[in-house]
Image (cartoon, rainbow, N blue to C red; front, top):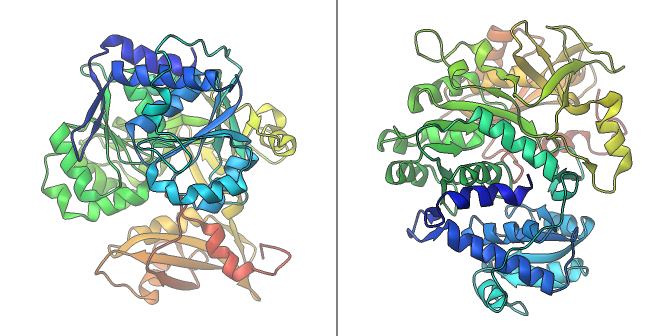
Length: 521
């Protein structure tokens, strides 16, 4: 099946059923109405001269018409270039230019950025404003009005590109992961196997951006005949109110937002009992906060691990895996796992020479799955490096236990070598995140004459809470010993994060390693 076929599958169940609902206003789009817009958009693109394989993008906050535009792009046989509205203008202009985008649909809230995008990305020859007429750009509904809502054959096969998704950029210049209809089909296969809505259609809360993981989860919900409740921003109070109001049973948030949600009074003020699946991913979640989430939201937490290059889930920690035999939260060991391999993915642990390692030995997590990208866009060197020895290399160091559970110990580039010892930053972060005053933290290596690299913790505290450097260091020495304890602690108001919520350790390290030929000790 092609990507567009999954939306059409959901729409065929009941064209009159709600597809998107705006939380703030209650405005609703039915499946039939939204599908008609996608058909008119695809015909308009074809009539405008855009052929199969041409790149198109959507720059918008969470919006039903914006989602229709991306579906219109793929229905026309074009390639959807996913860009995040939270990115800086500089980064989005880079992505649009380097990924050769020729069409841009944008929401009017980004009107001020369009002149600069026009200047920097000369290859874009069609701009369409999604919600109203723009400067030198027609409004979407005006632009498609005269075009028919007749069926459009995308003209693409299983191995044709359908999506160019930008890597996170946390470790350098972003690359474009090429996904085909086949890799998207494998994504849906794993999603339907892991998230099983047997009794009722999913009601998905779209608070996280639809341009990334949140959008793929929304697609899975729509393909099942469910609906997406749209929120324009991430706000803990609004999230809790929406769960109660719309009887949301399916949602996704990154760990940083879950931490803020747990700290908000609203979680105790609203009925959240409708939740069946609360998915999280994109970054590790501290076990102590995960236990708090289980106690707060119930037996609904599910971790999905994947990457831009592999889609997700390639491993998952099920709802049952989060629980102890007595029904309470599971122990630390279980909650630090990213779970077992998903049904349509094969994983292994590999050393630097391409040999597969036995259980309990640390190496790089590698993957074989149909959901793995076809390669990086116009980057054969990085494509070859990522697929060395016939496996996709995740860049994550980890191990598998005797029960088949996988554990990520660190990003390969984040391991700290201090005094000749290897220290996994994630291990130190989990201890610090358990401190009751800590909202989040990042542990990095900084240059040190004696140790080569010294461990430094950068800590973001919860609002109104306090902690000292001595408090944090003493906690680490007690829990994991002096070698792994940070030598220094820095407190910041807000940690630097990417547009999808990942802490940018690269930005933290740059202050200390700038000007040095080597970025390790």
